[in-house]
Image: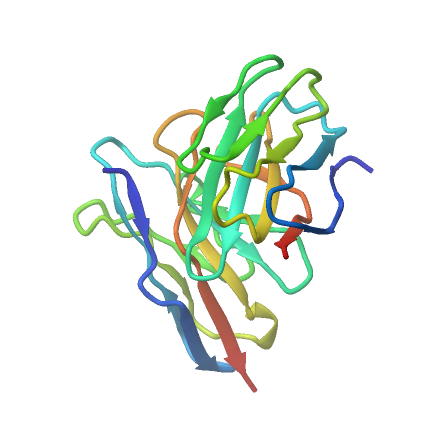
Length: 113
Length: 108
């Protein structure tokens, strides 16, 4: 089955530590996205990538970094510079030839202790 | 500024009652608008798109450019409609802007 796999589903980290969230897709989609989901604030765009080796900052990129070395993979690193990293993180890919459709992963919940 | 506003965080209705989830947008161009839904323990998924003018699971949404709205409606709510609903605007080819979401609770 094609889909997006995010790992880990739950992650705890101490303040000051960097952590990387994995996002892997086998859908052969070009564009991929990272969103942060907080109660009452909806989904906010962190980074997106249209193609391999290219990515753009979203609305809340500060304290985050990404890479896109392979089409299938779009990992997100939450650095110690992110002031409030505890959140639910969603990865998505854009379904080609389907206007407006993003395919979402199941998410990763990061808790900073 | 490009923005999507969903004024209600929570909407509770009784089973069989009509439902209207509000969405207003701010965008100077010709908008592309969508509704996404997230059922409990499931992925966020596309519910419907305005360009299709379709009805999915009994839900419809009409784009009103004069009022800059894209409200989601269903004449008779069902318990399985309980979920989180997000309105989304696509101002460009790749950038998606989501609203803050409305949690719909359908009471038995």
